[in-house]
Length: 265
Length: 262
Image (tube, rainbow over all chains, first blue to last red; front, side, top):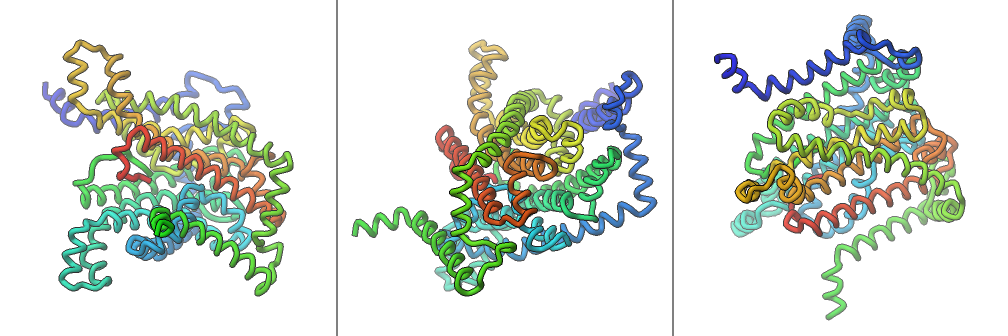
């Protein structure tokens, strides 16, 4: 009876982790009940082998070296997109002319996967860190800009008029009403931007690169080291899940009043 | 007066168009007269236009587009076929939700393109590898948007079906699916973007044909005008598909007009 109550209380946690554990166990046990043909075995690995490869790569410093390079591209690109996207979004939300002027480019760039610009960026900035920083920037800047802009647009007109009536200038209006009201939107934009930034790091390092976790994955795949591929993929997965869920937590605390919508990443 | 009203109404369109025209003209003039263009490093609109005309008349571009869209359509269709039922069941069965939600959320939040090299090596450079990649990226918006749609279904309607003796099937077909449809279309809009990423990365990585391959090859051989043509065409397709979904969303669910989720 008591275990039943415990189960009922923690049902979602037990089922959620149980499913993942079950999947991993099933994956691990495939070689036990099925001998893969030789061609397939080359592409196959198990969770235990991945864990072992992770441990070895961690010990010999490979992960640290690649992680460091990827982290710089990620942080610099995301930082740059915050520096550009936030102010531009704020101004676009307040100025209709600027909004109309920039709208065609932003609509087009937002709909197009920015990854297509990678060959161009490599051509212009070489295969060093700059092409990676800029592809991260290109991916992350639009969600930030658009969300900031949406936040400014959705500010309550009454509040704006009140502050105006009491003689506030544009700068004070921004500080007192617009910025605080846009924060939940900006945080939502940041969450999307983190996802795009990590995507940019991964793909940017796939091509014309000699360092970084993306390079580690691509070169391991070419050498059929499937376990190393999964080590890289797992690191990226863990980072995105931790970062986006942390921001999501912040977001739901700041904007608990917003209606529930579908998850987006 | 009437001309003025007309302008006020279509202000956004006119300013947008003139902004594009001015930018293109400035780009052309600056690179013609002030900084003469180095064709290996930069290009200008007139050269892009020439390349555009050549490409459209040639057969290669159409072939590349056909190859890419074939993989895209396969992957996307499977994403619809798998994603919507999974989302429906997740939304309606609490235990299924509890079991699948953490796992699928983790996958949705991760950059699954990281698996691209593996997919291409396992499934080959043909349609299968790219379609699998598109499926993997595009399926999650369908799952989670369908899920959110089911969750937001009006419980009054569900009670009505129950009161009038409707079965499980009536519930799905008459209430849940119609009220979920706007969410699914919003999901499709997100899935298009993610699917395109899959195609492009797959073709950048390893391919011998396709629009992504055409772009990266033009870049590798310093044919900038052709690369820009590829980028512009891809961009036009992306905008057209996204706007189509947005229109569709507004037609079948006009009340959702304000809630932008990008």
